[in-house]
Length: 67
Image 1 (cartoon, rainbow, N blue to C red):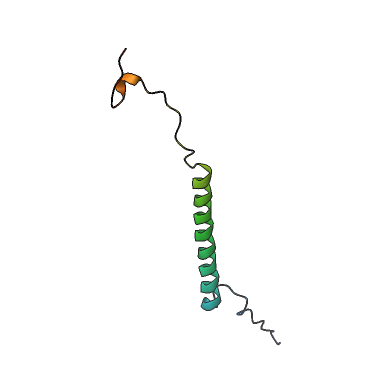
Image 2 (image 1 turned 90 degrees about the vertical axis):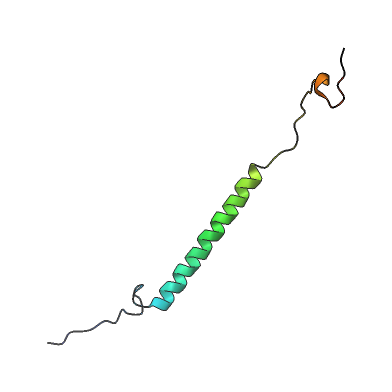
């Protein structure tokens, strides 16, 4: 009886550490880039819109004006 041996070593993720480490490196780069861009977008959408117009009583100014 003859058994056929199928070589799947080139298709195994854990067998070839060079291609798996390259794949994991690119996954890490993509995830870091996605988090940085997402954080920048979130900061952009919640940015400071400017000074609001605040009514300051005249008696609290540097040179106060009294009635």
